[in-house]
Image 1 (spheres, helix red, strand yellow):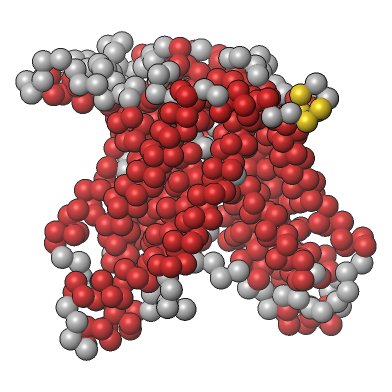
Image 2 (image 1 turned 90 degrees about the horizontal axis):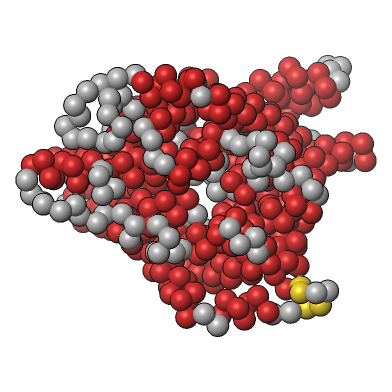
Length: 265
Length: 278
């Protein structure tokens, strides 16, 4: 493959490094000793981390976001797997329609989706409950879960299933021993990707919180509007670390090639 | 993996959970419409008239559309060199991809907060410039269109990088080689082979970024402040401050139509640009 000119390469590297720059700024600000942002910083301290960990509101928000992300990722991955497995194996003719429906939320501006979600949840009387947030996250994440699973399932050779069944394996056994292992990386991509999306979602979630429940990003958002104390920098750093670890895990267990594949599905 | 068997009704139940999720989504859309078009039990355009009658609301629409177009173009322009870099560096691609993915997946609020620290009146950029002695009074980098454009562009570049890179990676390597062998220079090869073949990724990025922009709430609200309103921040205010669900729904439907019209227009441009590339 051809090399890039040094100029283009430098431009590319500089632009690439600008992407995480604001995150590093937050990181730096979280260790700032004074109550406001200073340049050059005068003192370093961990007091904002101490503040973040001693304020029970933050601990609660982190835990809420984590368990909601885990529930959403598990549910939506199972839902997408069942739907993709059924259509690909038994009803390939409806596959196109199902995809159209599943991918339609992608063409919905987030602000409109937020209002639609409030309208629905208010109609069911569940605004301000974890159920409302979980249901909304399921709607938001379904396209991102369906795609990797659909691609993985599509690569399964039908002869393998026939072979398994000829040799006496039940459908469940064939699923467990043949199909699931082949689709492993698609399933893991779905789990981690949707988990990250749910953990970091704000635009729709902020309409659905209530006095008893809020998620980490929404609480950060509320606090930025009220007062921008450096506690936020500490807590934001924590949220970055969690997302970062999830991405590293994704790279380890499933690879990142899914993100840069052009799907021909 | 179709094995040619007929499905039984019991197996059809596997589709049910997905249909419930989709059903909830479409119900929410129907409720959005009924909120916007129904007033005291009858069909009414009252809420749309309220929006259309206000010239300051027109400004909000213009600002949203114009800013979103600028952001989409800017993001693609800045993303392209990064995609090229990742495309060319096979060895370190995974590591570089993480540098792109982390900012993409880290919460929107956190990235926007980073920009507040950077751009605010007492922020990093102003503190630095003041310390160096370039400026006496802080520059106004936030609570205006500049802040919104910087913030949104930065937030959306990673997506463009990924989708352009996907297009670049699908180019057959020997195409480029053939072009070079036939005597085309570096620039000519890029202009006639690489760039045209990366256009699908470019158009996907433009479309998705534009959509994400016109529907954005958090970044415009935090970096634009209360004066420089976006459709998204207006919607947020209607729901959270004035509790006017019907008006918020009417705004949302305007936004939806806006995105629909833009999508059709962009598809048309894309088709013209890609003509003869089948």
